[in-house]
Image (cartoon, rainbow, N blue to C red; front, side):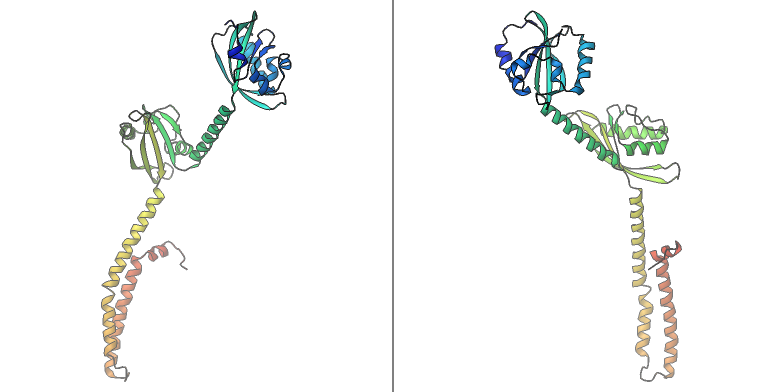
Length: 339
């Protein structure tokens, strides 16, 4: 590219710009924006080479790119976007420069035109995006819930640590990114077919959950998982994959079963109390009412006391039956100490 009149495109451009000679790297023209941002007067700027604008940590990168890749020759055609570089101003303060350049012919010499736009916002956005990604990654990998996603061909796109660990534990084989989920070699053919159907349902747009059981190899314990399958949309109608979430609900189901069993015991106890216990208690109250309490040695009282003993034994048997049907009996059987 041959440069002639640069007054309206170069001198007054709001982005810092300069031209340096490829053979010597010396800066031979600089615009007002560069002078203002970097803090060097024009004559001082023109006495520098382009490497002097870089922070020390960027010099090796520049030399590798310029001397090894470019060889300092004007062989590049078109505009080149080099990305964010760390520059420094006259006070040695950090400047993030988003560099775009193009090889040109200027004043009969092979040169390079450099545009150093402000890259601060890009760097800040990139750092925030990295921070967000790292924090999200930490949250996902610190949960015990299993999270994984698949593409349309049911190949793994993402797996958190909990999922990798669970599959490794159940099958002895760690899943790999890019491999087919339902063709995992640790699964049997019926399980492969079953999971293929689960994924296909989600790939057709269905959002649903299941309770899935598997056997823990070491303990042979039956583990229960609540698994949700969620279509991942690229656009409103274009499904590009499936997101899956699984949580171990084994302990929760066991507690639920214990509560149901306890409630059943309580219902049985209520039944015993209302029917079996009410009859002997009513008999006892009736016998007490007919007892001669003014003359305790009344011969009739002896017979009444005999009946009271019989009723008392009946009440004792009902109480024993209630204890047998209650959770207290289970505690005693398991050697728990009651307060």
